[in-house]
Image 1: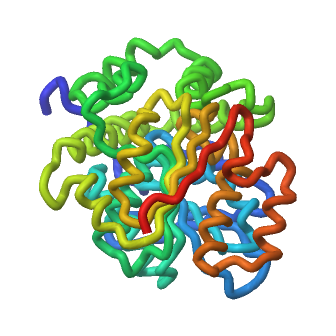
Image 2 (image 1 turned 120 degrees about the horizontal axis):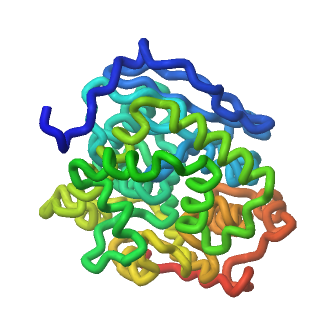
Length: 351
């Protein structure tokens, strides 16, 4: 093994014990064993039986906890599950070490096939948005609607603030960064992540910050943490270079499912200028722009994202008036177009 390669990771059954993953009130965690991969799935009981299923896919460095603010706002319209991608959250690394976009997409597809839950309302953020786009393109039978929050689709001119994250894909950078930041506390790391991902980090409550620090401390004890980060970043960069039918923009054009696109005006990782291109690429798209949001709008403005998704369901005839009305009465909620914290713009694009 060359000095620039990442160290090997021990098998999942001999990994050291770390602190338990946080489970919010009303949530449940379970492990699902599939060929070549074990996934941790976070779920909430729906308000009633018979609701259509929804599956949420997090971004690079995230976990299923990234959806804990949004899921309870949709309990009466969908049966929510959020997955920890292989190597993230509480899911161990994949057996084959494949952290490519296709590898993560295969894991999601294997779960949906095994669970028999499709077609689902599929959500994805950042890296998870790229994964969800690929799933929707190659397995349209599994996707009822697609909701993408700051999806990591290829950009020609990457924002300067996104460069350090992309550099994780370069061999040798992750071990170097680990050495250079050895003395950083979990609190320092979390503040850096929040400054990068939130449009306004002050929106994070003290309790939310404490939970994030606890999760960071847990992850840093995992021997595969940086390996999963670096290889997933590399997989994303490699996906950006693919052309032809395997290119993510070409696959976006193949998506048949009605698509809700959510972009933040203060996103430092995915360019806000990509919103209009994405709206043109997906054939049946509607666009929600949140000028004050950062990279994780479902965490910063969950009520507004929930409202936009409810509007999507209502327009497709899948949500009754009572369900739609409930969202309108949620504290902090507002119909897209009415303006929330600096203004919200929503528009239908395509048919």
